[in-house]
Image (cartoon, rainbow, N blue to C red; front, top):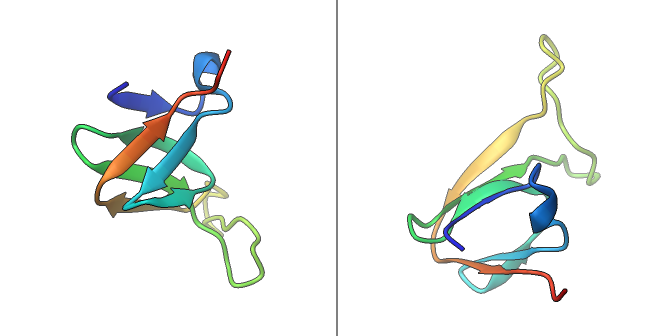
Length: 72
């Protein structure tokens, strides 16, 4: 799988790793291009949002992305 998106129901339960470390809250990633977008959390572990737009803040990270699809 090259491109993963969290809003595709076929991808529910998919595990995503960046440089060998599992990453939670991934919205989208591409293992061929080596990037992922995840939700940003504060030091208390709570999701962060832009105070003006209320949109979720995200982080774009680069590295070796490994996607493990769920066992069906």
